[in-house]
Amino acid sequence: MIRILICDDQDVVCEGLRAILSTVPDIEVVGIAEDGARAVELVEEYKPDLVLMDLNMPGMNGIRATRLIHEKYPDVRVLALTTYDADEWVFDAIRAGAAGYLLKDTPRAGLIQAIEGTAAGQTFVDPSVAGKLFTHIAGTTVVHDTTIADSLSPREKDVLRLLAEGRSNTDIAAQLFLSEGTVRNYVSGIFDKLGVTDRTQAAVIALRHGLAD
Image 1 (cartoon, helix red, strand yellow):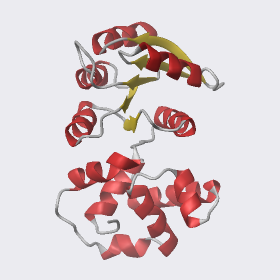
Image 2 (cartoon, one colour):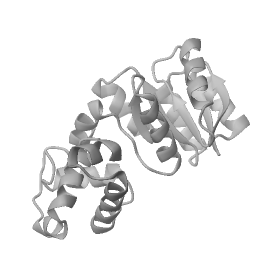
Image 3 (cartoon, rainbow, N blue to C red):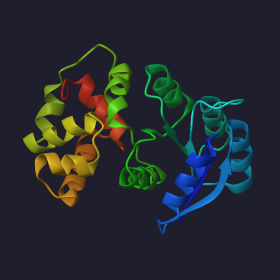
Image 4 (cartoon, rainbow, N blue to C red):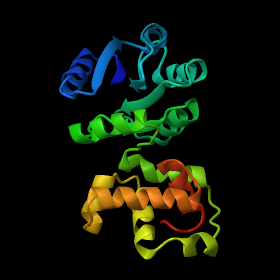
């Protein structure tokens, strides 16, 4: 069971998320916070597995709350869920310790997949902000490493390129005409070859070594 705390200052958003998540058997909403300060308090009280965190709120905003939660409760994952895709919001959230970054127009299936994946230690970033995030992390230096390139099959390179764009396994499967199970196997193999444990690390390596646009 994944225990979720929702933090958003808009009641309609909170109730909408609660309604969506109540339909998922392995997810339980344990509390709702109207601002960052209350979120920190409820994390202490309920010990959730994951916090769905809005960022722009009155009082303590979601960036500061994410930083405090990450520092005080490192086992609690924070998934930013916001309307803001501006660079400063994305970078500040990740620096503060957010485990992923989604926009509020994310479809229901994508939201649930991101929650379950984030709780399991994966990283989900909305495709519309993934490019700017990875480019920022990677910097301007691209190192072409033939050893890394040669270790990957042509199909693995295709999967890695799409992964670096922030695409989900479902999206990658559709674009490459593969089953999701096959894509998961490719992603697992890519992680092993690159020596990484999540999608963000793999994407950064891809960008740094010229294996993605």
